[in-house]
Image 1 (cartoon, rainbow, N blue to C red):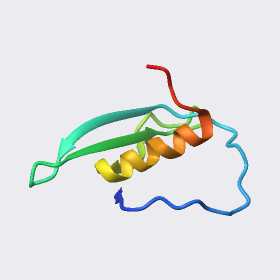
Image 2: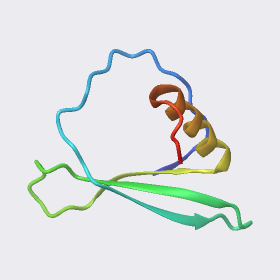
Image 3: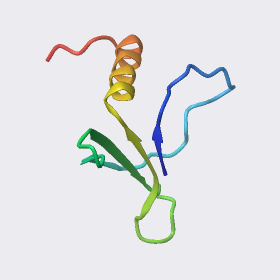
Image 4: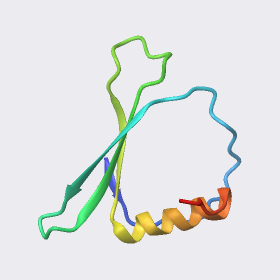
Length: 80
């Protein structure tokens, strides 16, 4: 689908989803060798056909690090 170039806090009226999906991730590289994180989600259990990729997103290092900061602000810093 697309490389996420920027993350901004939204203000839409959203609610928790009523279904769950599985996801996979892969590491790939741009033509100039920069790593990208590729995340693919698969259809929910309600899908009538066999599981197939529904959506994909890719993050470069800067956007991935920004996402880590957002996750830590929501859930706290992980003790690794």
